[in-house]
Length: 263
Image 1: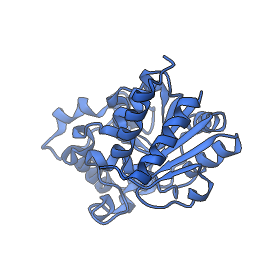
Image 2: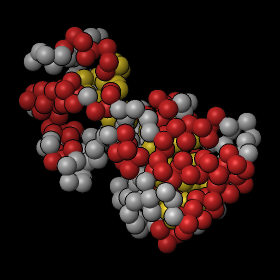
Image 3: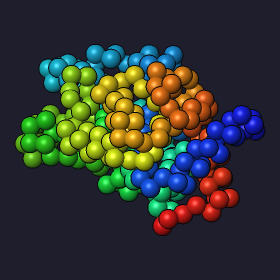
């Protein structure tokens, strides 16, 4: 049950969406957690189960044991391959389907926006995607799913078929820079949108957290949907403290009543 105060903010956000021509979503871990994917920092998160140092690029490249632990995590974790899109993902995909979405900028690596129906070319993955492995020598990419059946239950760590180089999950490790072109495209989209909607991000990880500043600097409206406060709340036009799925369901319901579409 959505309280009246929350409903007012949902309705205001729906009105902003209805009026906007270029809408960009910026999504963080708070969206993925509703699909059963734990975040990194909270109690019970991934850092309570894995050594953060194993996710540094130096340790990964220099330590065979680290690569073995990483591969075991990919094979046995299953949290990324088995997760399914939730209401928030589906709502964002629906907005693309009706012509009300310019792009999604995401800090998540779980491929759930694409699974929900967003076009891959409209999803800017700042931290990469766990469904791929990349060779550190020749940069060949392999779908993780293609290797699972061959190596599950073994101690063997796969290497690049082409050059025998080290295979690494195609996500950003500590010590690596964000992908230059993706960050450039995301920055441009945020700087030139009419409305930026942040969902499930505490906005503390930089440089990704600069995205709201780029949007406001370009004159866009800013909506923040997050369970807890962020340092950007004072700059937002609408702040909604609530779960991603519940809030987005509410927004979609209002938009459907308004019969909003430009497709």
